[in-house]
Image (cartoon, rainbow, N blue to C red):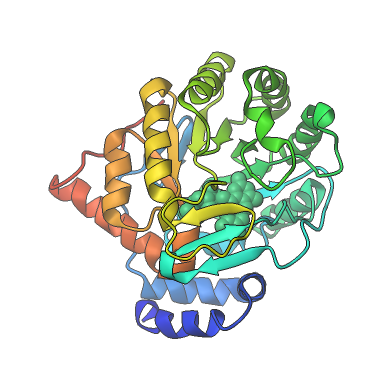
Length: 352
Ligand SMILES: Cc1cc2nc3c(=O)[nH]c(=O)nc-3n(C[C@H](O)[C@H](O)[C@H](O)COP(=O)(O)O)c2cc1C
């Protein structure tokens, strides 16, 4: 049913300005998430495939929701109804902030892509902590792992970034199943320089200490050189980071049919070749460090390719906007089938 009516819903949503469509959808899911989730569960054939391990976390499906779609966690209970096996909230920052001036989100429908320069618009990590605490109290906590992606507030100078990240981690520790340290979004000035070895060597130990045993993942940009990847991944391993999320959006503009000439990070289909290439580099040097693949994924073949290459799981954002809410269940079905029939890739690598 959802699959059938999605083209109509998408046509209506695409008549609205992109961020307005996003805001409207989230607010619908915030207020009507329970009945819509129940309908989605009835409608979508959710397969139960073999669970996968992301460090100590057990994911019921290797298909996850990427950061940025539900930054403030307003629709958290809804996402597992679509078949997501893990959900990453955020990016949240220590200070609530409005983000960049609008318009700041652009659809590129012929390329099945988005360009965004949101700039970490979010209600802040204190508000997220409060919302998550209330959800736990109400008993509405989802049955899949939930992570918080943490970034630096715009107003905090780069030299004080560590304190900003640590503040958010301290507020959220005990409430989420993992943290993702975001040093790879292109829309906060200087943020990506935190991917440098020296900066990471200051930031990560402080975050790991504040997380006090909660797994910490590191999210990297697709625009890093081989040398920069090797350094960041090597350091992550040395310091005891649980895994790598790769990749964020790109500031490059590979193979766009129509370039709207907007600043920001590009996601969706044109990102895939670059993300795939950078993920491979990360896998090559990561050893046993688990890798979550993200960037332009929309088909079962891409998911299987990444799992076969050694990713433990994958995440989606942009393809959900174009392919619709049935996508995660469809991808999970295909992966489970491939696993059960042994026709295609081997089961996702279990890291531990
Ligand atoms: C509108 C938008 C907002 C995003 N916001 C965040 C964010 O706050 N933090 C983050 O780590 N990644 C953010 N991302 C990046 C996604 O999590 C993902 O890494 C990237 O879009 C590539 O995946 P995709 O091609 O499936 O969208 C955002 C992406 C989009 C399109």
